[in-house]
Amino acid sequence: MNKLFGLALLSTSLLAPVAYSAPMGTLSVHILNQQTGIPSKDVDVTLEKQQPTGWDKLAQGKTDNDGRIKSLYPQDQDMQPGVYRVTFKTGEYFKRDNLSSFFPEVPVLFTVTKTNEKLHIPLLLSQYGYSTYKGS
Image (tube, rainbow, N blue to C red; front, side, top):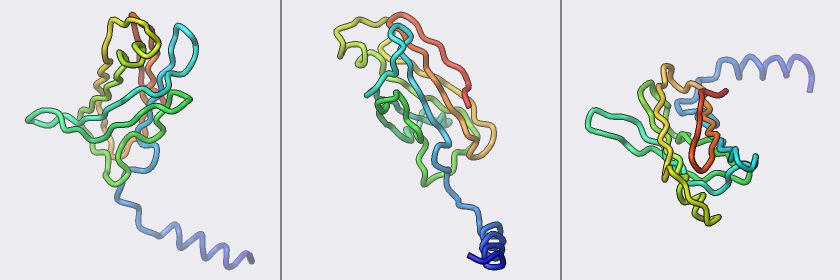
């Protein structure tokens, strides 16, 4: 490709309209089992947004072999500011290994302050406790 043509392509792409949907990976989650040090695979996760009348379900997914869902937020919508809830269905995860768990699910509420803000919610999990934080 010659330099002039490459420059024309670059300038055209800079002027192209921005997509009106959440970019892939706008909201990702990860679960690590602290007891084993192994990612928690096949855990059901739901995403909801708080509305004046209650919670509106937006998406659901299952963690991959690395304990991740790389893009939980629907890509055909903008992720608007507001209060959201990610719920990890942890009871079923432990039950598969014939283990008891104090928490049948772990709801994590968080606030989005900017449209399509890139967010990551990790969950460090054990049978009788958990912790989470705003990741990147």
